[in-house]
Length: 61
Length: 147
Image (tube, each protein chain N blue to C red):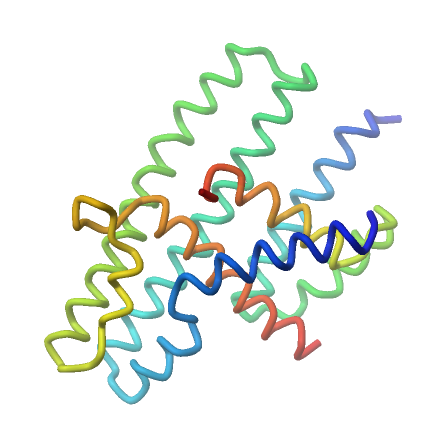
């Protein structure tokens, strides 16, 4: 049994890597993203929120 | 996560997006010119890679915070990542500057670049970093809508 916090963070990071692939036009990324969303019990919007929040730290006025 | 948080985040994102030309508008301005289209793809590509690097760095910081890695390991990784990320950030800034100059040479409106300039008249690192975010999420929205 792994560390649940670590596992969650790794899944979130993997979801973000897949977001990049999807943005690059790789539609197969969407399926894997769905699986991660299900495993994390979080929606695409919620994960997008976290992704934006984490990125924007340091970029806002 | 409640609706209020999501709404607030959307407002914040919209506010950042409103400061810059939209990637879609840039695409329209470059459309039909192979050189400009290629330079624009460079901007998009560096943007995506830069955002990914920032997320990877964020995850590394989180590993340190939770004690999964020691400060020594974190520093070692960070030193490696930092150089690569700085070079990528520079490449992103250069790609925006090169696109703007080439648009100017062709008498295509490049006034949008003013929104990227700092008080020293140079392309500001923070603005270019924020634009990477705008690019990624606009491309992502288009890709996601086409689900």
